[in-house]
Image (cartoon, rainbow, N blue to C red; front, side, top):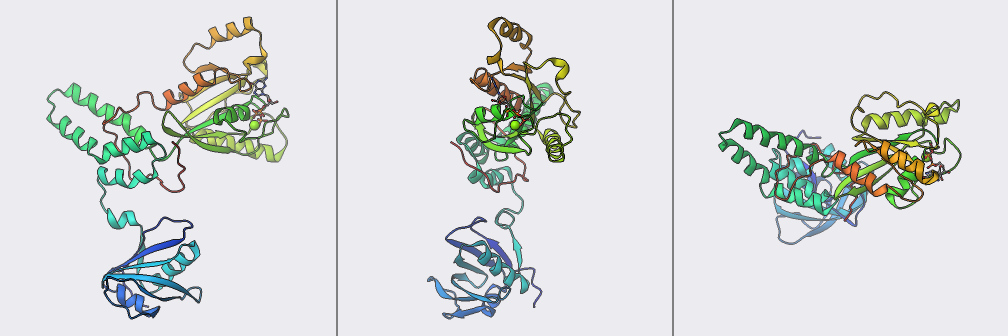
Length: 361
Ligand SMILES: Nc1nc2c(ncn2[C@@H]2O[C@H](COP(=O)(O)OP(=O)(O)OP(=O)(O)O)[C@@H](O)[C@H]2O)c(=O)[nH]1
Ligand SMILES: [Mg+2]
């Protein structure tokens, strides 16, 4: 084995299954390293692809590959796209001292906002998030900084910075969805509400209390922004160990939530309702959602409507869908009170997780 930190292996195709995978071997010893595992056409710099076999030392098998050598330092290796084959090629090359780096590290070592936007763009789950990323790629943030620098009025300057901070919260969720957690007492109708929001029966609904035992999630989009909803186990006193574990998971999900929707069955008397558990995160990011309004008469409903005019209280029926649209409007307004306008600057962070993103239109 040689020690060679200058030769790098870069996966050019995404992780996961595919018909063909492309890996770049880049560095001063690229050709020499490849030669050790190669049988086939003579390796040389050529416009044409070269055909041969690569000895996968780590699993003691051969893989048919095609290589393209544009210069001695830069070799593209095209193999079957299965994860096992690509990993075996990588580990064989790593045994020879090459080091694996991500394409982001390789192509954009010190990313500017523009480069970040370009990196995230393929993972934008909606047209709206793609448009915001395109605006950043086209220099929205650089323009904003340049303009702010020229401002004389400190007050206006501060206002522009405040707006950037506000937009930075949105910037965190252009690829990674906001987390909205539905929690509350057993049988309050959390799973019914979750299904009604998503428009299909993702969660099991049952009249028996304690139906949901685990956290069930689903990603969708609200107003063009990615949101993952979480349905959780209901809170109640229980001796059942599995249910207790489920309740503990509910608590953890609440801690991680960007917004908590606390679901309440309004036909259950107040003194029988569980207390809202103390969580680290939830202080103001909460909506109280009184469910099952279809079960009350119109006079009682009118009283409820008056009682819930406060901005964090809502009434709905998961069964009939009444109040659902208003609930969704409130959720998105709480997550993004003042969404970025076209061409506005939205700061991006480099640590967004782009893997396994779903796509919505
Ligand atoms: N009439 C009426 N019934 C509802 C409504 N929402 C839920 N239910 C019923 O209430 C019962 C419990 O509903 P679920 O959605 O399973 O309640 P949950 O909060 O998920 O319950 P757990 O998972 O056990 O914590 C079921 O029989 C539902 O059909 C509603 O808006 N109106
Ligand atoms: Mg449930």
